[in-house]
Length: 503
Image (cartoon, rainbow, N blue to C red; front, side, top):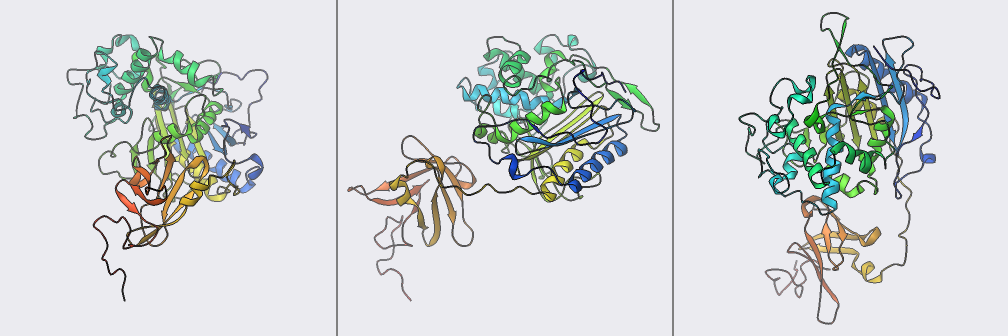
């Protein structure tokens, strides 16, 4: 294994030892404080070390690194290596493969938030010469455009990008294998088109330069780049039937770069994990990052425990415990991405509910169950040291009495619901008994609210008033909520029996 030496000011961490906690990302309204958690418990740290060691040994990886991010900072890092004296440290670059796609997706979402495109736009509206001009940008982001899985020609990850100098060179005679929008079909060339889209809407600037200026520099990710920069790990293939290794080439993939070209470090990926959990208004808002984590397309085949959002893979972990080689347990909802390039494997998973992330890197083409390692590192911390809830705090600023008057019980027919007032004039609707449709609502400038999740996502909530200005009822996408259950004089569609309730 070849790992370039660290800079003189850095001391490599001993194999498998946890590094110091680092602040890796923050937002002005980031929840939690370091004092809420402190250091991980010794038993937790040992379990993390063991999981990394099992992953490296069973997977026969020349080296493997892992990290856990919680509350916006790295709380554990570890490294294992097969070569004495060459322990990788947090600033050693590894190739991260398809994790690159999450970065490209963030650039596209920035363009959306700036009003330069809509996710529903056909890509041909903005980019000439595409084989799927009618496929939408959202379909490209979610791998549902129907494009072929791989680029035309020899194995693109192991061959020079010069073999495909023009965009047309990426696609064969039948570039579209499925109808757009019908099903999920992973497409690496689709992300080449998204990289070209970024360049087109950024006045011809190379996508890598846009990435560095708009995303990497604001987040302090100075060791993430399109080409390796010392120190970096060499990539290896491990013989399937013997403990022998073969060096892998590290090609510049050219136009296919947006699908998997990036190199990064454990330290930088900790910053990226914090961003994918919280967002950062300098790059992309927390709301837009959360939108990326929503399912955008049905999963492949019959695998309903996995899916894809806008540039991020989605998974629901199940079974297997946290110490062996299986997937993490507990039905946890994960978002992130895996990556592979010749000589390298990578995985990054986040659990937004627990505000925790797991990362794993290895410098071999195949062998380690890298996705399970990253998921299990996350799971160990989430199970052994679950998130501490934020302290309750009252709303800030003057209290709007008209909004306060809207809170309390409301009835859809005879079913009781409660409306609660939240920060920034937001409302929350939830059933008081049994089952029912709950949702959160964002306040709009026109005095209405827009549903954010559940059945009412995108629907409008209106307060309907009488001629004298008193509140009559709530109209939620034509569903009427009144202050009493089926009041005879209430504005209930279809009317109420004039004799009212009876026994």
